[in-house]
Image (cartoon, rainbow over all chains, first blue to last red):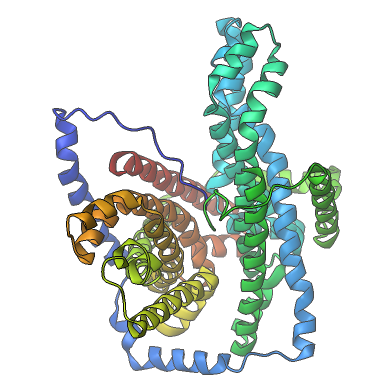
Length: 288
Length: 284
């Protein structure tokens, strides 16, 4: 789990009226949203306990045991399992390819603000810096706000069934997230080394290469690996919309009421996810 | 899903490591490229690109007739409701389970220095810990969408199975994260409380929880952001919200309506991200 980027500490003026009112206002709005949402989401716990529901669960659980472990079935599942890993790797790679340039453009300290641009004219900053910056931010926001499943569904329509639309979906959705986080990492580096390099007469490229990149790289690598862990989970379910991998098999087995196969598939998924987490944690231990 | 920090000490690799790592990554990429039938030239070359441009062109203009507009708004509200109640249910499930999955609350550490546990009590508590951990692993290993299918079997179609699916899966995730936070709290205040003669419950309430609470809120808000996206997809398996409408629009080639729905998803996700950031700054 990525550490949540925490907001800068808000300055607390005890006398400020809005601050004193906030707890009450928050409680009231929160309670109202919960009540409203309970109704909208048609929450009705009684439906969980009626005879049909419990009977269905019993049928489901009984159907899962014993899990299907014969050689034929396991042999058939090797390919989708491998495919799931490959989708996550390739998807993350495309996300990096999209995220790096967009993230760089979306970093205000690189494009239009701060020590790198002290000698640029105002109009120059606006046209060459701020306009691409704003455009990159907008693109990143669209990429990451449309969930990967929706992207996958649309790419299935565009390029057909199989693992490729899954790769593209993870690439686009995660590219949006990576780009945003990369830009946050780049903006939060200490400005001192940059100023020192600048004062020593280093060019812009020099400042970026020797001042910015070394500070940002460990966090960039760590966050990318964390996203890879998320990607393996995502690639396992993108199959539900026809984008290859284990998800497609889970969906098929669910629809055919083959719950013994579902249990085996979930176990395979667990092993895959746990291995990727372990590998990723290991590499993060080296870089961070 | 651990934090970005290393878990325990890891040996630093030697000088050849970057080269080896580079070669490893390159091999992994080549293998995955081949296995997933990536066809970037086909996608970005003439024909593929033209198809995509045509498809995107067909989306415009969005269908803003009152009917489509109302449909998208209803879907967005439903998705929002599913994510909010699902996340709250997750906190409700994850919090008690995390207490059962925290070693420092059950059998070791400062709480148990003064009054030691008998061997029988200790074995029992280790068993509680193991059971808690196993439950959390089970809950979060099964993806939301599979939980959604299971709950659709149980209680039928509609947003309610979506709420249950998010609650159960996210409960497993939050329980694990909460447990890690509880084990990581600064021991100094706990020792101070213990030195004044505070009992276990008092140390938990006045020493552990105040330290853990901001992190809990932060993680819960973060999962809410994840859940608003997930809530939108659960509709694909019949669990209500925008997903169901998107599924229909894509299947029936109702492109203008699809764009309206995509705009609705974009707005609701951006809104929740902003709300979550605001609350994190205010509450944490």
